[in-house]
Image 1 (cartoon, rainbow, N blue to C red):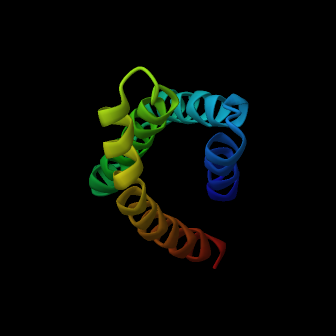
Image 2 (image 1 turned 30 degrees about the vertical axis):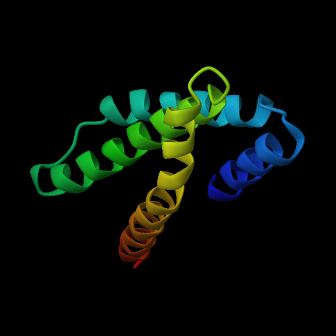
Length: 105
């Protein structure tokens, strides 16, 4: 998914095409809805909340970027925040990979 989002952002900025970025927003919204529907063990609630918050942040950033022409300041702030969100996503993905490996063994 990370690669898809990177490609969607590249397509938006390089070719002014927003289809892929719109799809990323829709995908993330669906993920949030699905994650909210999963019962979460007490010991995993904090991580669960971190994932939800990050996905909500990505949705807000991507929507601000998609509306760059209507609200340039908000869009530029979102662009500046992308690196931070990407770093957060990397950390969460590492934790998910570790947990997946734990489950496999």
